[in-house]
Length: 193
Image (cartoon, rainbow, N blue to C red; front, top):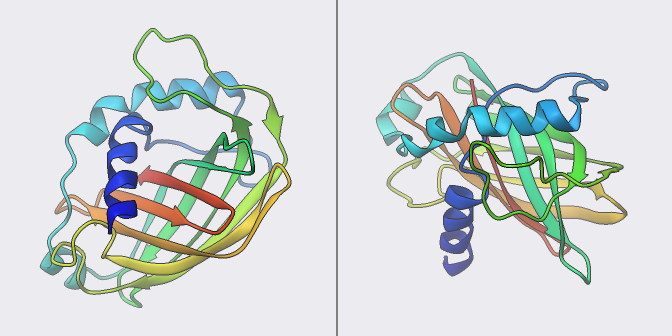
């Protein structure tokens, strides 16, 4: 639980700007400037979010497609990486599935309007994720609404079966917050529809 609270704090600072659009290179491929501008554009959006109630999630039907960003890190030097996120919540089937790609080295803790683009060089990598909606989105606390796994490789750091948790945000289910807790990669993700 301490780890998830720490990641929740990171989600509110490191990814305070995240949410918006993804594009390109297969599914991803925005330029570093476009990626950075999307982060800045969405900074105020996430600050207004609240965890969706259990009823809001449990009574929903259909699917919601969220796009946004992940910030993961790992390796001996704890290098951080920022990438694009695309994830779908199937409220009728109580599942989530998605992927992340288009990663860049990234070491900033916050992004503010007017900041210089802090993204470093592009790195090879992709992550896939899948899980279930638990039915206890709000009542289980931070990260208790999604239970799943993630796997993949970012800049040569491989995660084969990391733990994925998270929650749906807002009564309109307009956002998603994710926590990545693996043996080799740790981080947070956030998306909006």
